[in-house]
Structures are given as C-alpha cells and as structure tokens.
Length: 101
Ligand SMILES: [Zn+2]
Image 1: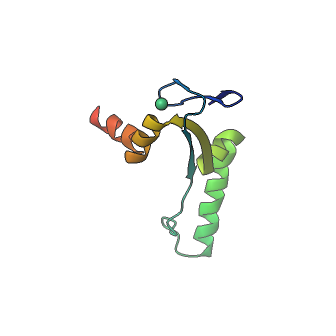
Image 2 (image 1 turned 90 degrees about the horizontal axis):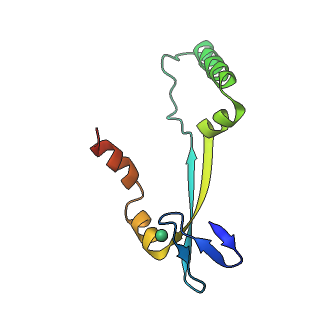
C-alpha cells in the first residue's frame, strides 16, 4: 500500500519498500462464472423460474454482498520477495487451509 509519495509498504510482509527499490502491483479479480446449464431447466419456463429464484436470492442479500457474489477486484503492492512467492503459488493460501482439515 502507498504510504507517501514514492513510499510503499508491502501488503505481504508489511515492510516498507525502500525508495528506489522495485515493487510489484498485483490485481486479483474474481468473477462469477456460469457453465451454461441450469439444473432441471429443460424448457423456457424452467429457465424463467431459475432466473426468478436467482433474482429473489440476490434481493435477500445486501447490494455490496450481491456485487461481491458477482465481481471482486483487489489491488496489492508487494516487495520483490513476496511477489515471487505469490507468483510461484498464488493458491498457496487455499492449499494451506486444506491441510488443516
Ligand atoms: Zn513483502
């Protein structure tokens, strides 16, 4: 994160990136995806019903929650070491959680 003009703190290790040092920006985008099929929808009426259920579900959650269900974008500033760790295994955090089960 930027803490001043040309000053950054690494979002990974939280150390200040020294002036003149290279740092890296990472943008993580997540978006809902659709596999092209609706369970049990065999005709137009089934599709209309499935869409109505989805709209009803989205009405029950907050607008920010609905947006997060569809699209999320986060920016991170990383030092060289944290950037290399992230690029080498961006899903590491997910794998670590699986190990704890
Ligand atoms: Zn770092």
